[in-house]
Length: 306
Image 1 (cartoon, rainbow, N blue to C red):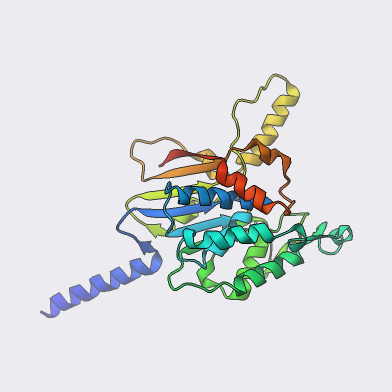
Image 2: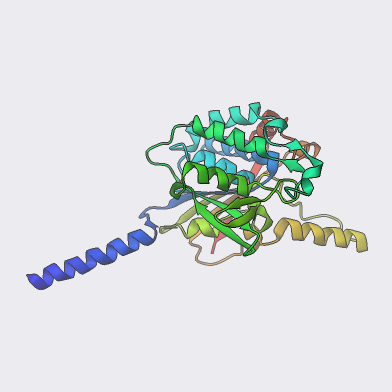
């Protein structure tokens, strides 16, 4: 009997160690990865609205990751049980937010803050929004990435482990577009926009949970590359190379391949409206329009997760 008791004790100990390392889910899990895009975060939110409203994707996710504007969206979703309950408030925020609520011009700041704009208004906006949002009992696991200038690595922060003040710091860090906005000093390091290193966090989401099948929704704030541009001369060749570097540098979606035994599926979704070409990622005065463009025109392509 004593041997049986000892064996059971060892099994329980091992079980507790496994659960402490990561979350184990017995059924297929649902992950959401949100990319960056400045004011086009509204486009991303509109796509999310469209997909959830038409039941193409679930409303409840086990893990949500975000970079830059996607990090702001992910941080907001942390305060809600599911996406459906968050969407009305999210749409209202994008509708009411203006450029003056995000940054003000200060060209001389390049010598003191190393940026042309002061994003102090964004910090005030974030504090006001999140202070007036009541946390839920069982929030999703939210990961937000920011680029560490010192280590030249993407640091990933677990939102639920952070204090309110640190959450604001992380959101400011992930959205600090270099030169446009000043770097954010946090925990002894300087941080800039997470999109400098990677514009999505799919692998990081997978590493957060263990389940038999991963159902991943990736939403981009920008249209997908057409892939049929005419490359017939030196200048068009150089232009194509530059586009590839900026669009696919450390782009996890660009590394997707085919396989015989996938461990999940990535549903990659992009806006398709050509009207987006008329808007700037630094113009926050058209949040409602951008939201509606994302909601009305988007497409998703499934890829195997190998």
